[in-house]
Image: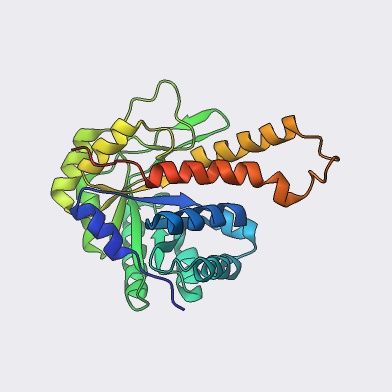
Length: 285
């Protein structure tokens, strides 16, 4: 069985001013929660795997075969897109070789000309393997250890060049941040997003979707955002559910140390959250 290329799903969302959610995996529990909910609701979803998460899980083949196996067991092949998130050049090539049908090349740490040159190469290889490509233009902010880097806003002329390189979707920097947003965050630059949408006329991606208000998410969707990435919020939900379990259970009693019991609470919490976003009303009208 070959995994699906999600290009049509994302472009359909763009045409309808709708959105498809990208939820990052962190282990088997995450992957099961995402796929089982997508199947139960009959809603498409993108499962994102960063190089760090892939390494944690064991490697590209492990993640690919884990997701493929879950898709087969849940009969969800038409709903689930496995996507390499924030891959460097070599990561993208490896993912395509293994069988990923959607990759993101993150060249934002390179100078723009290198980013563009590598994007062109990856697009050429991807198209030969029925694989869609996401690229990043500008630099998306980051929060880590209470320190914040606000990134760099996307330049329209650079975005146009990356579109012309052959990318299917484009991640933009409009004030969004990976991780938790600081209290003094200035918000999304909707004027820039509006101009990008007018000039590019293609699906755009909002990284750092966790922590942005539903109203702002809906507005961003109306202005061309067709894919929203979620990770931090689900990590927090998982951690808080585990904390609750440990607070309310004596681990050495009733085999509470059994992983299937230990993770049941957090799995349920993650599934509930995933249901809430997949069933959400995201059309501003």
